[in-house]
Image 1 (tube, rainbow, N blue to C red):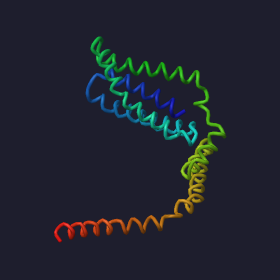
Image 2 (spheres, rainbow, N blue to C red; image 1 turned 90 degrees about the vertical axis):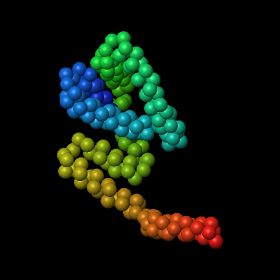
Image 3 (cartoon, one colour; image 1 turned 60 degrees about the vertical axis):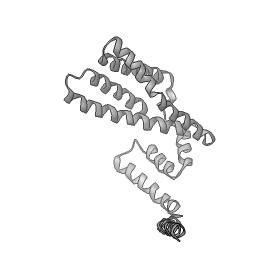
Image 4 (cartoon, helix red, strand yellow; image 1 turned 45 degrees about the horizontal axis):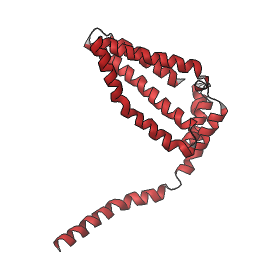
Length: 193
């Protein structure tokens, strides 16, 4: 739902930005559009990672990252529309095209709006953070205090697993600068010695 709602609100702010009467009005609209675009991006990456099996996750996320290389192609198309019409209509037209795609996806892909037990169990099994997130999503309809207590409880249960190698990591972090210094000193001795 955050994916669809974030995209829809993003398009509304983008259309408002396109037809804003003054520069001062464009800044808050652009900020709000960027915020909801971030909601969309985070939700889409989360949805991708929940849907894809572990063995394919790296490849799928790599392809997802490659799509960001296509952004200049959209800028080229937007520039062509702006040349033919007006900059405001180019921005508003792209927002309206995104709204049409959003409505198509919302109508034809009902499973995007649903969060069932199988997806929660996949999230729960994926990582320690996934377990905490799954508890939060499972209790999302309860009161704020119940939600907060459930997440804190899940976090307390995950803490021993997360702290398991913390002493080793701390030792490595303490020794690493001295090893770097030793390498520097030995290199200088070898160079000038």
